Picture 1 (tube, rainbow, N blue to C red):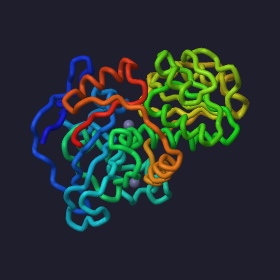
Picture 2 (picture 1 turned 180 degrees about the vertical axis):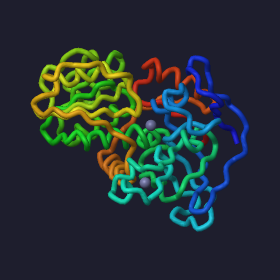
Picture 3 (picture 1 turned 135 degrees about the vertical axis):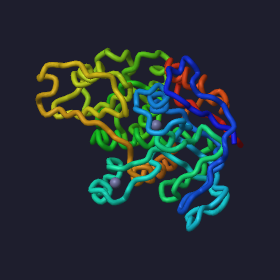
Length: 333
Ligand SMILES: [Zn+2]
Ligand SMILES: [Zn+2]
């Protein structure tokens, strides 16, 4: 099969992914083989490719927002019929036995495996995944529009949940890429007032189109105090600015897997019971709940489509803020 292979982490400007022919994987026990139709490009892929996340497997095929069709069932796999349209996301597998898995927090599993990081991902024509970690994709979403739902969408949804935001509340987004452009649609559906702080004018424009009441620069103070804010941009210097925008008791959610160092700040910014928390991965329940909500709204993702062999170009565009919405690799029809 054709695949984009990362042999060693390097800056994306050096076009580190090699478009090569590799053997297609075979589904093991309880796994399905999926013919990839589309794969979303996520900021986490950038962190994997540039080595900000320490390598877990090398070489590796990145990509963890996969939409495709089941074409083969491994031994004992019978959850999905052949031809079923499915999604494969970041959480490839958990051990199911650690204290976190047993307490309903499998996103914090002690022995997790991640798609496109510790196992091969979806920048390829085929992928294998345990059927119990695969999602049915609701009808109504074309393949390319569905792909960004699988990480940007699900993680954004978990961020919304952990922010505790309620109907009538005010929510800030710091960074307005793929995740925020989906999360704002859920927030607006919940009657939440949205504010977007982002450096790129195209992203500010998209935020306003999607119902933000205000959009400004990353460090511009929103016109009203916020009940909660979500930081999607991987820049630690945003944290003090976002804390400053919160009301007393406000919640700041950090949605990324990697962030540059957070500068020190005065205790006053945190006092009055403001709270900072990170989001790590997601549970399958988050994914199932989000896909149901996404279909009901329905969410409309803005995508820019690249061919599989143009993955390096897509990653460079993402790094340069040149994607309004989400980048998606079209692999097959
Ligand atoms: Zn576990
Ligand atoms: Zn992701």
